[in-house]
Length: 459
Image (cartoon, rainbow, N blue to C red):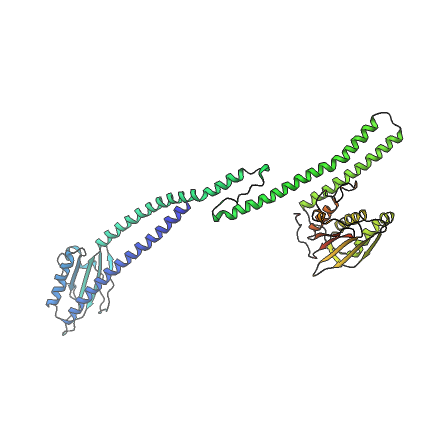
């Protein structure tokens, strides 16, 4: 419809322009013809007496020849009393003297015709050069009825062309629209066949028109994100089920053993204490998963305030000092830096890193918390341990939920590094881990130093 309307408007504008040009051209030619005839007669009247042969030939013979053609032409000569001295045959009946515009009192070098009905009329005053002859008035008329007929035929032809063009452009537009939209319908059918079991299918693999390649590419990128998100969700669900199954099975087993026969109060107390440990583990796991879910939503920006990094490191060290002494590990803090962070989230991330460091550091080892200034506005808080280190194949997976380097260890659910990474993403920073097997590990919180204007989205 838009194509048909556009074509109709263009055809209409072009037709109007051509019609106007033709009309102006014909009117200009008629006026030039009338002006030329009057100038010739005026020249004759100035140079020769009125009853000369030249005047008679111009008024009668030329006018009659023109009158027999499709462009009838009339001439008339009047005296000062506006009495007819000479005129073309039949002019008096068709064009009385009164219908002509009054001529100028003085001789004019040019004449300007006016339109009256089907005639183009003009009049002028001529002063003869011979003797003291009185001025004469010339009246001329040109029938333009044939031009009007030609313009009428042209207008009808324009209407036919416009209607034909509207119908033709509508039909062509419908064909073009159907042909152009067919690939979009094919894309729609292709997307309808993609489901949970077929997320690996892609749309751009087919030879689409180049105008739709960007759309197909956008669909494929969306499918990539959906496949990745669905894969991570499936893996998360499997890991979550696995992690929850162990403590629940332990609780069920202990309860079944305790209820299998009568027991002493001490046995029941021990069973309840064991169950309480499993409940605590479940509570910590649920709390961690809830935090990760809230971090991914990123519904609110962290409460960013300027902090002295050394003071935050020292607070975490003091909290874990007793545990470190119990394990025979030396804790130390060093370095100075100012950072912009949420103090509660920062301490939680540092606590997770320090807890992991203490877990994998042997007695007699050392864990150092260090604050350093990096290039530009970068600030880095590192937890460096002299523990067992991590094999290179595990490094890319560190930070994934429920991933543990040593699954045989009973403590922990593999969510500590995932929480630390989510906290750093909220701070527009990053978590980096460098490790050498047998020599130790360095886990670093890298802050960009930029003030956040809105919450960051967890990828």
